[in-house]
Amino acid sequence: MSVEIKNLSHTYSEGSPFEFKALKDINLTIEDGSFIGIIGHTGSGKSTLIQHLNGLLTPTSGTVLVDGKDIFETKKTELIQLRHQIGLVFQYPEHQLFEETVQKDVAFGPRNQGLTEDEIDQRVRQSIKMVGLDFDAIKDKSPFELSGGQMRRVAIAGVLAMEPAVLILDEPTAGLDPRGREEILAQIKSLHRQKQITVILVSHSMEDIGKMVDKILVMNEGEVVFYDTPNRVFTEISTLERIGLAVPEVTYLMRRLKDKYPEIREDIFTVEAAKKEILKVIRG
Amino acid sequence: MLKDVTIGQYYPTGSVIHKLDPRTKILFTTAFVVMLFFLNNLWGYLATFLILATITLLSKIPMGYIIRGIKGLVLIIMLTVVLNLFMTPGTVVATLGPLTVTLEGLKVATYMALRLIFLVVGTSIMTLTTSPIDLTDGMEWCMRYIPFVRRYAHELAMMMSIALRFIPTLMEETERIMKAQKARGANFETGNIISRAKNLIPILIPLFISAFRRADELATAMEARCYRGGENRTRMKQLAFEFRDGASLVLMFLMIVGLYLTTWIQIPLLFPV
Image (cartoon, rainbow over all chains, first blue to last red; front, side, top):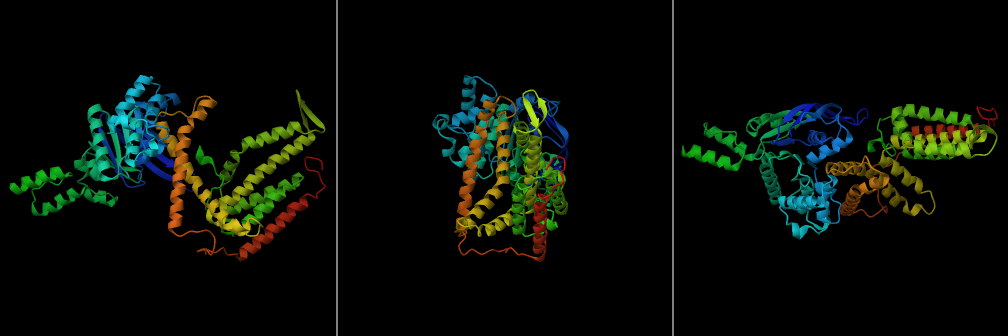
């Protein structure tokens, strides 16, 4: 599914003293099957932007086209259908859990899609496995007796069970320990590979998304600053720093090394690639 | 949808009305509400309207904002009007099938509707012009003069300020959870009343859980800062009764007396005395 955003603007509480322009004339295209990272400071409009993609928020002006079709021109029932296709995992998704058991909670989405019991059961099993949990051990537990990281996974599984063609995740790793972070990111990545779905990942951390995504969308104060490959985005260090972002630590290291070894490459943002490059340069 | 609720909201403009001592405003609003129920002719309501209009102008709050507050009560007002219109016995002025409209009914219905509207407008002007903290400080002070309640004045005021403080938070939370469930294909917009009620479960349970979690966290945070109720507690900001409060109190007293005097007017306006 391709998503096209056209002249999208959104203003909160228009006409009151609390008026806030969250998005200002956004234009971009997200190709089918791509992996996009959205990064920006708090209040830069990331969350507002993604809530337009499945019609949870209605734009003040402009529109969103999904597979060429204007989603704000369609009927309510069609919009509900569309939400089955575009899965959105909110920030702190564990706050949406409500059922008595994990199995029932994950089944909420597929059940709303009107699937048969067999299909629902199969999808629930699959998606719980996909987020790295043991289905048989966890299915009858109450979601509220799980640990924070497990709750987060169950909540993500609840969206995966709908088998969306586009998966949007809003800071899925916020508040998790480093290991939980790594695991969830790795699972998202393998999901993208296996199912060939479009993934949009909102994050605060350049390190996290730099090594995973095809393209990074950098936002600042409701506007798109960059929308390009990580290699190109990470060379714009001064602009990134001006808007309160940083490039991965290792990129800074490479920059400093360049003073000593002018032939070394700067556009590197993973430790692995840095190691290779440094060895290459030093060994000549 | 939820954004339209204006009751209890604060609308800062820095006007004269905003700067008044909350106690002055509370006293006036209370007297005003009581007075509303004494009014017995349209002169009184006319005077009320003028008073409210003047205060609104002084407060610099847009009219639309205040009117939005009434919108939520349209149903209750309509119900009151319809019931009073058809259920009051007296001189019949019109018949509509089995229903009869009496002159007395017309009068009572009009008065009740005006009363409700002015009641809401009057009280929402108070909350719109007073920050929640000022409001509860004022309430606490007022409660100290009510027997029996006096002992719990601080606790009640604290409960009130916490409740007021959490209204917007819980609204936001509700909206967030609603969106999250909508993203999972939940449908809140169509269906019959039973299925709609059932659809509320995925919102209510997470909402309750988060409310309890917040309450728990807040209690811990308060205890960590050694909060133990009103005893010996001092304030950073003392309420100060200034010249403008004295002046406005006199003005307000005159307004209330004026309103009371209208009940003696014998000249009929629209309805006989």
